[in-house]
Length: 209
Image (spheres, rainbow, N blue to C red):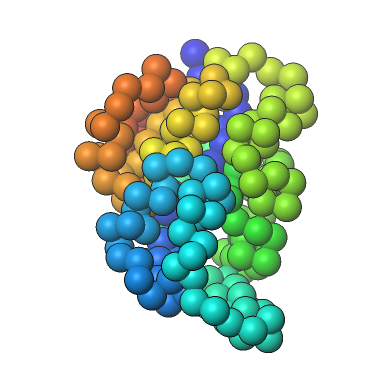
């Protein structure tokens, strides 16, 4: 049975934005490492970052605002992964409802979606303004469509997202080209994790079968 509603994470799934996000995060947390940055994503990103607040570099409000502005501007030009645009267009043409559930705030997501030209492909976009919990946003999505959870499929690149989708009872496919590679998804068993794919073509084949 085809999945009716496909929910996408954004960073590391659709856009090659993890390197930029990591660069800016490590600049504001000079004592952190790339390995630590990857570990933050094994739980809810917004909650995990609070555990490292003592490592954050002190900055004035003006400096913080400037950093946010520079990051948003740079991120808005981030390229999509090869094949993603065609993949999304094909899904949309085939009648799937496409939804976005991202940890990013509006300033770091909406300009990127607009510049890439894919905003019209999504029927519903949920950002951190709605909630910093993906579990809560999954509930909003369920309420909006009043659909059986078996009719949903979530696509993500992080173990933390897999865990939140597990709590929500949403079937999930993990991709290995984002923040986490295959080794992270093998750390623990989650019944909602129905597949792990290594390319956009493999993801397309998984959905179409």
